[in-house]
Image 1: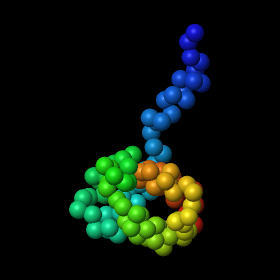
Image 2: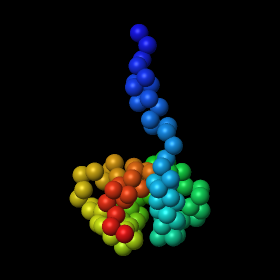
Image 3: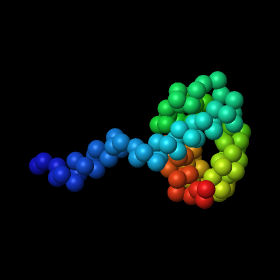
Image 4: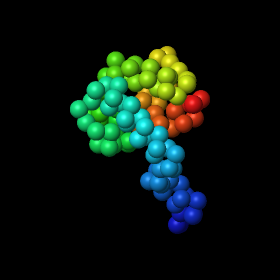
Length: 106
């Protein structure tokens, strides 16, 4: 039995192109990360799909608190430390950008 067209499309979805608005937000957040955390890298060198913690960008919880504060100032909403979705939100620059895109006020 061959997969239907819908199933094939669903399988391809994760590799689909990132919308321009989200890509722009990813670049803005990469700049914010570099500036706020004084990272020794360029914003262009940050892979939006790489993990923010551990082997990815190597951030720790204090770094994330600093970034959350900067995001609240720049985009007009709070990222709360007690949000049960924080692990998912801060999984990567891309997941953070998607969250900011949904909640920003400015």
